[in-house]
Length: 143
View 1 (spheres, rainbow, N blue to C red):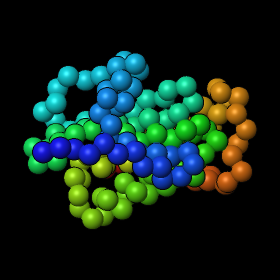
View 2 (cartoon, helix red, strand yellow):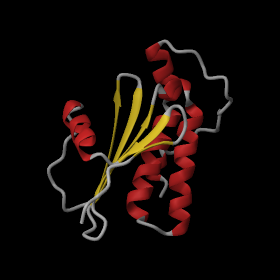
View 3 (tube, rainbow, N blue to C red):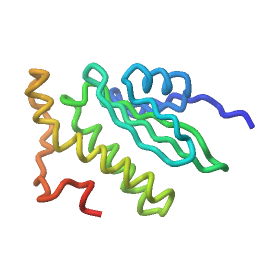
């Protein structure tokens, strides 16, 4: 079976790729490489000012990597919201529940920390108003 490499530009600041060379290079460069490929994995990291989210599906019938990148995420919170909504829709359809919950949680966590990163990177608040109430517990504990 040949997996077609694909890069999909969703918005000007959000793209998705399954190019395993690019994904593995990113994981190694960010010191987030893992070596157990028997379980599903979700890894997130910040490279320069870009939010990177890597999903590894360990299923025999559909194994492989997918990486989502939100460029300059501090100034493009709308793309984080879009990405979160994508995972939420996938969850509602019942596809790969555990992996999608982990991915959604990582996006929510970085979204709620955007103000902190904006201050750290000395970036202005985005023009879009995406203020939401922060939950009492971290989203990763609310499942």
